[in-house]
Image 1 (cartoon, one colour):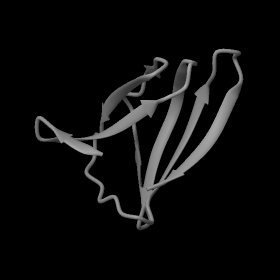
Image 2 (cartoon, helix red, strand yellow):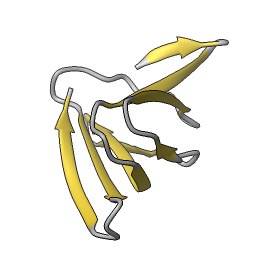
Image 3 (tube, rainbow, N blue to C red):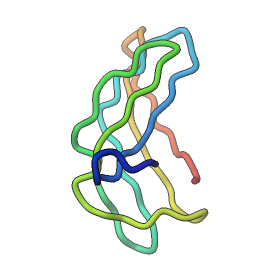
Length: 82
């Protein structure tokens, strides 16, 4: 997470050699969920930032749940604990 031009962004890093085509991303913390709506593909070995439409306070109990489609067309579901 970082602030860019006054807005909070989720920063996504793809260290792999494969494309990560995200189809869904939601951050949940303290019983509140915020969907990340401007998600896109993250190219191999690159980083991208997605602006959040709503403010959310992220802490060590916050969870990012996501779905992506890999280069082979397989949908992958995952979680990331902040």
